[in-house]
Length: 217
Image (cartoon, rainbow, N blue to C red; front, side):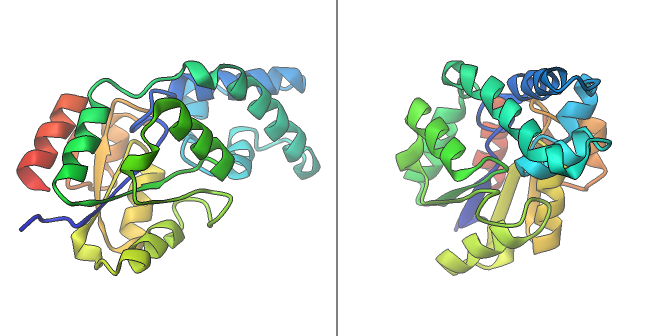
């Protein structure tokens, strides 16, 4: 019997090679508002959060009433190039193999519903997933709501659920929900940072992810 019945993926930096584009868009939005942009590492740290929470952390000195303006400029820059973003090489095959094995596949993301649907449409991966949760439908990561709702929807217990992500926000959400978290380091957050959150494994490449899932999931 498979160890995990429900496998939940983060999107940006885990399935889609989009972390660099997100960083550039945050920094460009800051420049539009005459703000000092965060460093690459500061901008990478907020990837995976809902947009307003991400802006709040990336630009903590910005008055709250200006967050909608900041978010609008971020969307402008990100949407200008999001159609050019691609899945990491090998991800399509991993998802297909898991689907064929009978797993329930889902997405838990900091993207908005419109943003996720747009991304799924561009890459054609939408039909492979049974469900998804987005930051404008639930509390932002690391709150457990996304995972809790997905487990309830399919009546899957925590010990039969795996959360795969590239940020501490993903791993904390897994911990907060009582499920195993699997870290990948090819996205937004680095190996040393992710290991602090005690994932079941910390994998550095997509081929490593594919092999780990075949052997352990």
